[in-house]
Image 1 (cartoon, rainbow, N blue to C red):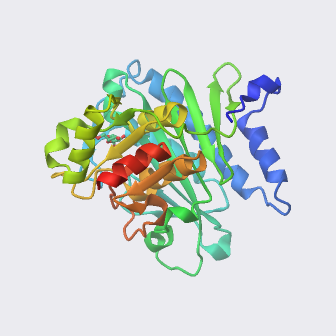
Image 2 (cartoon, rainbow, N blue to C red):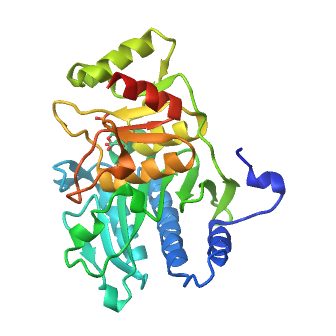
Length: 329
Ligand code: P6P
């Protein structure tokens, strides 16, 4: 049941919520809490820059392409720098990896206290910023394996091994959604207090909802099963919602239900979304909220990554709706 925290009258900030969670784990060093605190700080700073981007003339292209061969937006670079600066100072981080950087950044070895790896997409959907669209920061936290020399191999862990995942959605409000493996909690930034305030604990996705979310412009190049599913949905009173910004589309599904998919297409035969820092964090959140997530017919969290920036086809959302799509594949 979606318990609304404010109904209890208590006021919890993200910081106090993390500390209370930490106190439930005797012997916790607090290192993990510091990382979430750094992401929270970065989220507030990015939110401020996103909302002023038009005024500060920081919209538009940065004039370079990122490792994905996509045109980098100036705000991508700004958000990436903010996250690097906030996380770089945290002593427990071994590796940072970003969609905007070809190689992972090694901060410190296991023997120097590097316990965690943090991966992120600093500003997903940034191309919609020019038209005031919602964008988001997606993050995931993995344990560092000090025995593995290669940073890329260290972060190539199946999604089931994530110890935390979340996103910050910069929309009409700034929402911070996080799971540490025991449910999904929603915080909203109160700009006057300067804190993310807990508003919903234990979010549960409705098990079914007649809404699908896909870019139907590519239908002709979808595998046959997806095409058959869409024909079925059209004939069964489904409606379509697609924002084209992953955090916004997933957030709608987290709150209202439905199914999101980014199938293989001619231009992206493995799908467009990246497995490690887009599909996996979203899949953990959705599964923790009672939904499901698959890549083709394999649970997303069981896919074994081989490359930092590898892509994966993604279907996630209400458990009944994901199963309906899977039955057509
Ligand atoms: P398309 C944004 O560029 C993004 O990476 C995701 O946020 C979004 O889900 C997807 O691409 C949209 O892709 O091909 O529909 O424009």
